[in-house]
Length: 143
Image 1 (cartoon, rainbow, N blue to C red):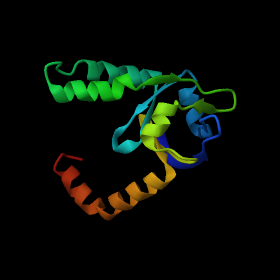
Image 2: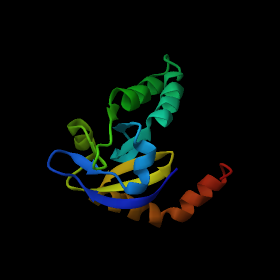
Image 3: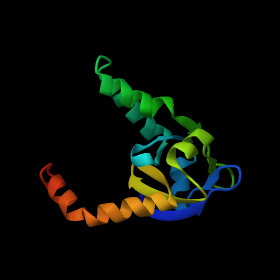
């Protein structure tokens, strides 16, 4: 389980240090892909396989299903945590997420989200202001 929020810096080669408490889960490999809200999603290989199977079962005849599958699956890349606890983020994914130097690593139970620090701060301010509305909407869903 991934929880917590951490700030790390990308090095000149595009490598990102992973928080120590996340490394054990990711040591057997991981997959990074485009995430929603212009962040990156990082999954363990096992969690990725489960998600990819569900996405692959979406109805091919539905244009939004095809678009979502392309968005999630075509941009995915296998990554390995090196001996210093870093992973190399592909340039096209760093560009998609608008990552500069400072990156927020946020644990969200079964995945990790990777955000440009400034974009994360902006996103967080917006959701904090709307937290009551968000909670009420989720209440209607049984959360």
